[in-house]
Image 1 (cartoon, rainbow, N blue to C red):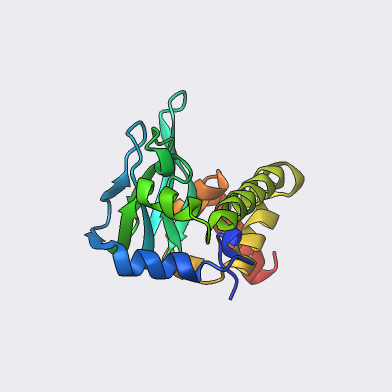
Image 2 (cartoon, helix red, strand yellow; image 1 turned 90 degrees about the horizontal axis):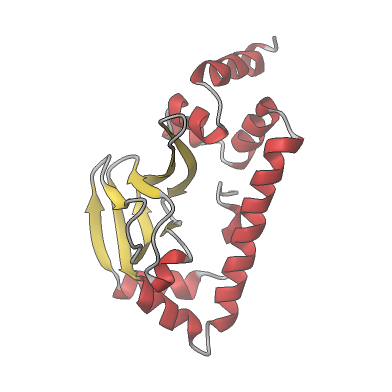
Length: 190
């Protein structure tokens, strides 16, 4: 099944997952708990065993938060690459449900990815992340909101059962009413 976070497609991340699960600390987060706060040094990366996280940015002009991404079970969570060097996080990462995460220190991850056996993986992860973000950016200009919603459903059909309408609307940067209308059009062919 395709994942929402397409950067993981085509990458052999099993050695990295295995390392984090075997050496990381299993941490539990309740819904609403922060994995990292925006404006704070980012030190951790994790592998989500269960649950999901929202990536959130704050628009100070509108005094509004927007969801820019999600991390689901079987995916990584963290402000990559900022966590590798303990740089200030640009996003808040908040548990959308109760979650279990194996997490390690970003510096430990940096050393692992800089080692001989994984140095190519570090570059590949960056390349794949850039490609995903670039495609999402271009899609905001080249396709309609309806098309972006349909692509989201195609890529991750279970998202409508996992994420509430308000959060999907925030991710697509539209109102919940707009998403509701699009759903109705798709369902009833209006």
